[in-house]
Image (cartoon, rainbow, N blue to C red; front, side, top):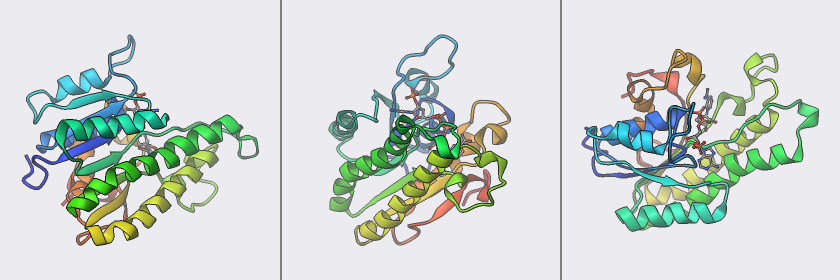
Length: 246
Ligand SMILES: NC(=O)c1ccc[n+]([C@@H]2O[C@H](COP(=O)([O-])OP(=O)(O)OC[C@H]3O[C@@H](n4cnc5c(N)ncnc54)[C@H](OP(=O)(O)O)[C@@H]3O)[C@@H](O)[C@H]2O)c1
């Protein structure tokens, strides 16, 4: 339990697996009321995680997690998720946008459909969520927005093998970084913190296993506690402090 997060309402978009699952469980264990969003609600054979599994994993470790099935690449689903979260809890204190689209492609051959999917999921959809969630935060002069980015968004040496084929993805995450920059300025007068987190190479950090809340949630809990006065407009990497985030 974390006194500054207990009772807060956290909307976690992209929470059925990977680090998003760990973030949702970590926020719930800290006492936050979590709305977990993803397309997969029920388990699928051969796959271990789904929103149902996340809700069950959180049972007894904090307030019950509310799972909402949605395909957020559809505008009507974004609106429905925000409406349902507000109808259920009355407010959203923390927005964590973790969902994404990616894909590999030669730099000169990125198909139109690939550009469309990646720019939609990594730029337009997080923008739509902020557009719909920020007004009620502004009215309360309180809130924290966390956007999940990647090292591929930074200007790095071209010989970094981890970035090969990720032109569209890296470009979209660079756009997401700018969304954070602009909103951190626009929302500063309303005491809303807008920060970016890069999780690092999750598979390697997790040793090939399912990412755990104990290992991955500390930076999200730290960023969820921020206000515009304490920290906004910043880019942080999970590995900055490991599990020892302040
Ligand atoms: N993994 C890494 O090494 C790494 C490195 C750098 C940055 N990142 C960033 O960290 C974040 C998490 O990465 P990850 O590897 O854990 O991602 P992931 O395993 O692909 O999980 C993405 C989550 O988003 C959900 N999602 C995807 N499309 C959706 C849609 N249209 N509507 C609703 N939910 C959707 C997925 O659930 P459903 O499929 O059930 O919808 C899933 O819960 C991403 O923003 C990624 O860019 C990851």
